[in-house]
Amino acid sequence: MKALVLENIHPTAVDVLRSRGYEVELRAGALREDELAESLDGVQLLGIRSNTTVSERVLKEAPDLEAIGCFCIGTNQVDLVAAAERGVGVFNAPYSNTRSVVELVIGGIIALARRLPEKTQRMHDGVWDKSARGSHEVRGRTLGIVGYGNIGTQLSNVAEALGMRVVFYDKADRPAHGNARRMASLAELLETADVVSLHVDGRPGNAGLFGAAEFAAMKPRALFINASRGMVVDYDSLRAHVLSGHIAGAAVDVFPVEPKAQGDEFESVLRGLDNVILTPHVGGSTQEAQEEIGRFVAEKLAGFALQGSTALSVNLPQVLTPTLDGEHRLGLLHHNVPGVLANLNAVFADAGDNVVGQHLSTRDHLGYVVTDASEPLSAAAIEELRRSEHCVWVRTW
Ligand SMILES: NC(=O)c1ccc[n+]([C@@H]2O[C@H](COP(=O)([O-])OP(=O)(O)OC[C@H]3O[C@@H](n4cnc5c(N)ncnc54)[C@H](O)[C@@H]3O)[C@@H](O)[C@H]2O)c1
Image 1 (cartoon, rainbow, N blue to C red):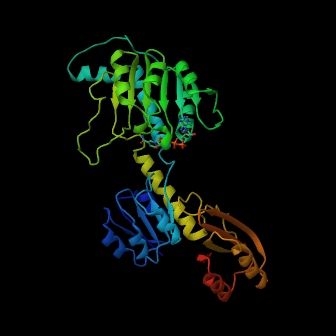
Image 2: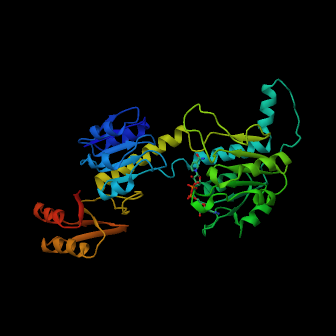
């Protein structure tokens, strides 16, 4: 069993894969299409980050490939449809950097409430300016969280631990954590919060979610944070409200257009404003998040390859399989058409094999059924399933 791991993925991933019996080949950088296709001979698992493109052509030339781990959040670099058609599972790490984002936001709130950007700048300029003017504790202040998902809820818990009051607004019906209070509308949140922090997702309808009207509706001298997506905020309006003094400070980590390469010039209307913290999309970028991403994705790859679990796959039907405990498992990835399950169960019945558990899930054109039985099916029965018209692959564990 062989895994090819590119792009300096954290060593925890390698440890997990080696501990499950994989021979792991490591390459520091990304590979171009030709090099990648050539390198996948005999490789079952591929680990990449965002700089390796896995095209349909690469997938066609990699018959041994079973799964791709994107050791990052995004999966645009992989042709997900072509991978699904070939039964290649794709996994990523959507939640491994949640805590890192929360800590940056908390740091930003405290720094802005104490006007640290100005204070540290003055010290670097050689000016001793000791004063409590405009500096506040965050204890007792109200934090308004817009988007109460993974990050929003964890921020809610940490902010309450600091003594902040928390209100939130989410389009979906999310339960409140701790003493947080749900707001009926964004407008209600804006008139209640001393600090507004955005944590919505990147669905198309969220473009321009926060503009002139929303900034104007915030409390005078409130603070504003965006570590979600650049396109959700009109930064010209933010600039105008910081300059007018209506907004007392802002921390911004994400921008509608971000430089592509390390060292490229960063252009923004927010540059040069007082009490505005600008960071280069580093909310989720910590060593701890990298380590967790390495562990998480490697576990998903191993769970798929060694137990047939497609839990959290981004392109295959999701089946979370129970841990094998002496049963004989058969996984059948198939086209999502009527009759496949009946045929499969007829094969088990004909073999006199007792089915002890069965899990089915479908997604678009594919279905995935995992059957645990008391005895292994014969090679001939497995071959019969493999040859059936709608089979993508059959695997046994
Ligand atoms: N700065 C970084 O480095 C960094 C790192 C990780 C994630 N992110 C971004 O943070 C954001 C949140 O991530 P998450 O994992 O918590 O996502 P999530 O999907 O778990 O939560 C998003 C929440 O926002 C809600 N929502 C969406 N649109 C809304 C709207 N218009 N009004 C109110 N609620 C709305 C959804 O119902 C959901 O509960 C995402 O945009 C993600 O891309 C940024």
